[in-house]
Amino acid sequence: MASASRLFERPGPHRQAVKMTRILRGILSVAVSGMLLLTLGACAGMTRQQQRTLSGGAIGAAAGGAVALIADTNPVVGILVGAGGGAAVGALTNIGASKH
Image (cartoon, rainbow, N blue to C red; front, side, top):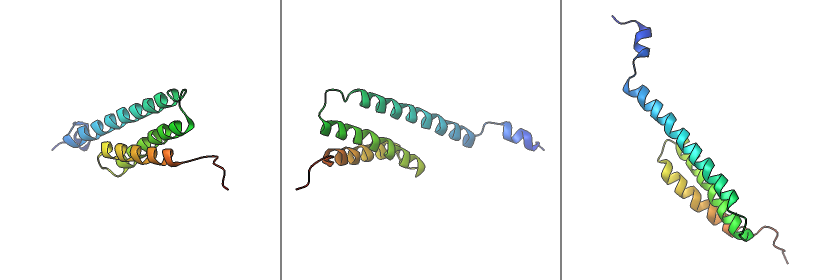
């Protein structure tokens, strides 16, 4: 009969799946962070509305990806839906418009 400590030392399919999930989450978080940095650097020659659209899309993509990972669903769908929603809200937002 195997001891309990030996059972936990063996890499099983569940343990490998957990390790792959952690690796994929790390890669996804680095990719999203890189996209956010590129987005902020690309806003120099844009109008304020274009900046809001791009920023909203990036923030929405990050939020959608995070929600998808937490909900244990497809992160690509979460990123795409979040990016679309964030870009739409950013484009439709008119900060500083005078109300008459």
